[in-house]
Amino acid sequence: SGSQSSKLKEPKLFKNCAHVTLEPDLEITLLEETASQCISLFIMEPRFAGKALSIAQSMLHKLNADVMNFGLRWETLLEHINTGHNSNENVFIPYDVARKKSLRPWFGEGLVHRTSGMSNVDLFSFVDSLKD
Image 1 (spheres, rainbow, N blue to C red):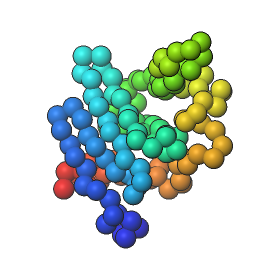
Image 2: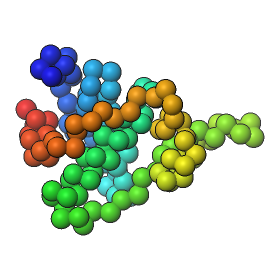
Image 3: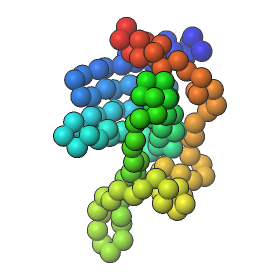
Image 4: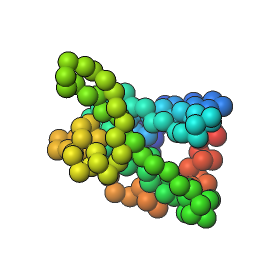
């Protein structure tokens, strides 16, 4: 809606990084690591992790279909803080494994998930709106 978009912060774009506000309480940072050909998604609010992940995946699928002619391949790894055995070690778990385990904060009850209506966004209009 128009009133919602007026409350959003302007995106900040850098050479290998972007800070984007998707909704008033949902800010993400995308970081490109060119050497490893990796894109990392960072969120500040864990309750929005599932929604941010869903939006990012939708954007990748849209980019793959509209721009890359289905030539883009990727693996989604989700960060999990392993608190077992007296350690707070961060590990990265494949998406399918995390989904099956309902790994928080990415999956589970009581979390904010993606709302419908995002799949028909025109990719070129979206990218152009980030440039303004």
